Image (cartoon, rainbow, N blue to C red; front, side, top):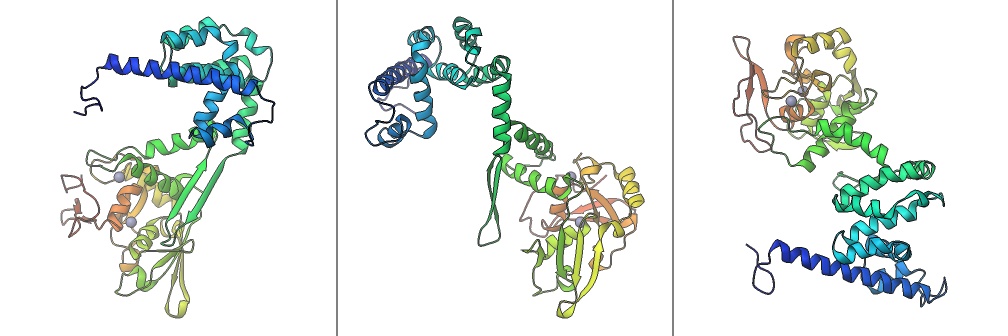
Length: 377
Ligand SMILES: [Zn+2]
Ligand SMILES: [Zn+2]
């Protein structure tokens, strides 16, 4: 239980009333800002470039907060009923801001004439701010399809993604996508980011990051990766150097995992950095072999995982560098997550004497928890 500063725990009604008071203050603030803007020339803000900059510099507001209240200030006079609805507490200040943003976004000057303010207020009373924003986005397209399209195109042309390596080789991502591009990415990532079983306790952000890597490794079908390592590294001999993936050092286990992948180019170096093997997986696992594997396994073979086979990688039960064959009997399909667990995670899949597939946990379960039943079907 958390108590308010005054001591007594407030009721929901009291919280709602307090929020209403704050909304009325914000409304008053927007009216004052309107007067502040109106009584000055366009470029006279005491040395500041714009009213938004005044709010950011002098009122401690974020760009978003300043822009929102500025937009309301600019349109409040034309929306007297919506302002009155905020005063009465029928809609929130944020609802009003969404209406003002719609008005501000319309390029076609006659489009607003088709809007009924009373209908907008009624729509707002029935919806949360998020639902109302979505509702008005659709309305905006109905009112001004060309303006909507131009904005979407603008956003698509301003997609950005920056990739920055830190000193340990980790990659930091920062960027922004347009709504349609973002939706495509989300719809590609979301299915891969689902929990892979009842024991998958990865947090959502971790699952999304894993999904992004999985997509990069398998998603397009044309991803060209090259991993380079010495034979000693592949054999995990003590003291061997790291392998390399796109000039980034990677562990022997990672090289081993990547070497299972039939879409990857593997360059193995012998002594004095002489190339002794350039294995492209398609030669290791032929197309008919891959189809046979798909038909046999259908999904990831990790117990409880249902990731479809076409998202999976053929895993070599005995790795190539340790004498494993390329026979179907030495391969199983596993999803990216479980493939990682079989290499970097230290788990092992083995075939028992009577031909059953068994999971052997790592000696020290340091990385991740596996299924409760160690026996594969
Ligand atoms: Zn493997
Ligand atoms: Zn799996």
